[in-house]
Length: 211
Image (cartoon, rainbow, N blue to C red):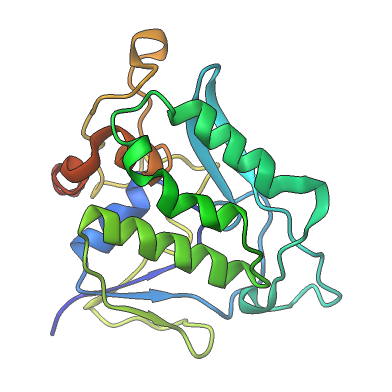
């Protein structure tokens, strides 16, 4: 039996997240947890001209605080799609591969998605496709609490505020970044940072980063 990993939904998730997609045979996205603010669920970090920059997808506050994540809706507040795309374009316009992938990503900042999990998954599938990373993806049908020896719970392990230093299965492999001379190598940025800078070599970086 192949090994299975359980992850939260995530917006343009970090490289650490994608090493799990690479390392495990099957991936489950948790659909029945409660929404948690200030996490990768609706926030990503990119490497911009002034350093790491957080981009947050606004969501509609649920009436029920125990609303499952699969029912969380995206808000149209603040023209965020335009702001995110401008930030991404400005940060990566001089990267080696942004021009190559630009037209694949642009529609995600023009089309409206109703639910956060659908938007996150569509973007994740695109990144996997561009990286030539094959994943067997499923969703939980209730909140997962018990795990077998072949299952790994990484839902809270990959956390915006915890950092990645406690993840002994992740060792960030340095790669070219546009602003590396200015800031040094910034590890564990959004996977689009890896993709736009390394293109077809992204999968090799993931392999070297997954312990």
